[in-house]
Amino acid sequence: MLERAEIETFLTLAEELHFGRTAERLRVTTGRVSQVIRKLERRIGGMLFERTSRSVRITAIGRQLADDLVPLVAGMEEALRRATDAGRGVTGELRVAFLGESTAPALLKAVRLFGDRHSDCRVDVREVQLSNSRASLLDGSVDVLIASYPFDGMACGPVLLTEKRVLAVAAGHPLAEAESVSLEVLAEHPVVQYPEVTSAEFKRDRTPDRTPLGRPVPKGPVGESFSEMLTLVAMGRGVLPVGEHSRRYYPRPDVAYVPLRDAQPIERGPVWLEGNTTERVREFVRATADVANEPLID
Image 1 (cartoon, rainbow, N blue to C red):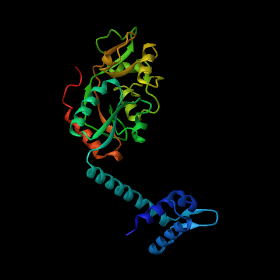
Image 2 (image 1 turned 90 degrees about the horizontal axis):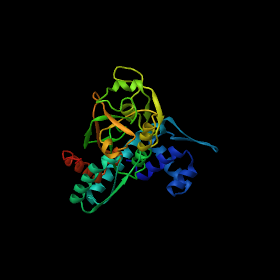
Image 3 (image 1 turned 30 degrees about the vertical axis):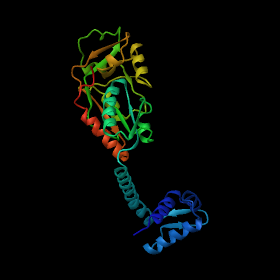
Image 4 (image 1 turned 120 degrees about the vertical axis):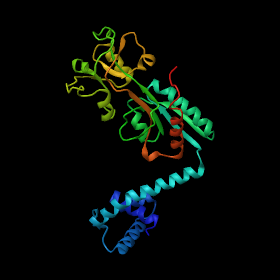
């Protein structure tokens, strides 16, 4: 069995390819790094690194060992974290966030239920924007986010809120007085676009490149926030498919919301980074599931 120090030294050198930097990161001497690597090579019976006075290169054997060890180490660290969470119980701090005003009531219902069940865990609630929602999950500043699906690359569910889609148009737009419209009208008007940082799958769902019949959809200008996107709509720069709750949370005299009769509903719920599935996160998601069938809008 490899010792933890041996694995850590080997993987750090495989990443740095420099004995000095490896020693600095591990806070040991370069001699200690060399000693550990030589011991591993004797055990394996082959060279893990090629050393010269100018460079360090990992060998094919070394690369194979690194590729095999990385997921195993990640799995051990995750198992240790889960065991630690279970041993401590649901304590500490949970950071939750919402994206869009319409998701706030669902979040607060879950926060109240979670707080009743786990009074020793402090819940911090904040709002994120389109521009930083994914980054907040990736950097760990947010543990769970209540947002619209699809949310690429994240664990999702359960669905807390389902709403019909409507088309946001300028108040003076020819479609503003229509009783309802089809998704096919997107081929006839520029569609305001979400910011670049928004996931590709989400943008395909909200602002598709083609209509259901395959007609190309012209792209309008990009908005950096939802309010900015509605402002572009109000200026007549394009139209925008949104959820019907926008009528309540984003009422504007210069924007009309027209039902989209053939569009699938929008679903919203908790999303989180799979690698951050702590006991706190699991219990909060369970709380969201338990409030999912309660009315969220008065």
